[in-house]
Image (cartoon, rainbow, N blue to C red; front, side, top):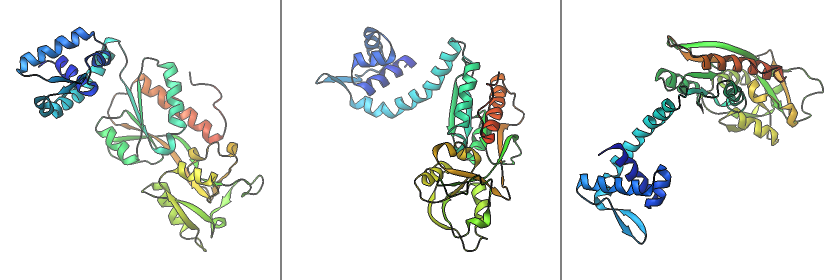
Length: 305
C-alpha cells in the first residue's frame, strides 16, 4: 500500500462519505474513488460498503483500523515538514514556559517575534520546570522559561530579569501608598495556598510556618493565576510571583513586595552545546525587554527592533 492509500482510507473512516473525504484531502472525488479502488485491488477485499448512504468499514477494515490510524499519525509530522520545505518556511521555534509566564510574557513576546520573523512558525506550551528540562533534553523544545534554575549539567540557565515576590490583597487592605509589607504582618491572616512542588512556594511556606499566630489557609490551588483570581473574589490574601501580580492594581487589587524582599529570577533555559538561531536569539532579547518592563510596571518604551 502507498501513503495515499492510507490517507484516503483514514479520511473515509473519519467522514463516512467519499465527497467529504475528498474535501478533507483537497482532492477531486474521482481521484479519491480511484485510490480507494486501487487499494482494494491490491489488498484483495472490499474496504467499505455503502449502507444507507454512508460508507461503512467492512470487517477486514475494522481489524486494520488501529494500524491505519497509527500509520496516519506517524505520517502527519512528515507531511507538515514537507509542506514547510515546499514553501521554504523556517523551522518551528518551540518555546515552553512555566504557567506564571504563559498569561502575558511569552504570548506577548512571541507576537513581537512573529512581526520580525513572519516565516517562522511557533509552538507554545506550558509545563512545570522538570518537564521543560525533559523536553529540552529530548530536543522536543528549543527554549524554556522558568522562575527556577534546574541546575542541570546539560541545561544552560541564563538570567533574563529579576523581580520580587508580591502580596496580592483586596482593594483597601493595604494602607495608601504602602510600599512593602513585612511577613510578620501576615500572621493570623486568611491566605490562599499553592499545592504542588513549586520551589518558590516551598520557600515561602517555610517562612510562613514560622509566624505566630499561623496564617489561616482554607483554600489551596494549583497555579498562581488561580490564586490571583481568588483574591479578586475576596477569598483572602496571596503571595505570588511578580509576573502574576503584573497589572493587579489596574483591576482594583492591592499589591506590594514583601520585606525583607524575596527575589524571583526569570531564567531562559536552553540545551548546552546546541547551535542557536537568529529567531531564538531575537526571542530571548524580546523576552528580556518585555520582562523588565513588566517588572518595572511600565509598558515597553519601544518594540525591540
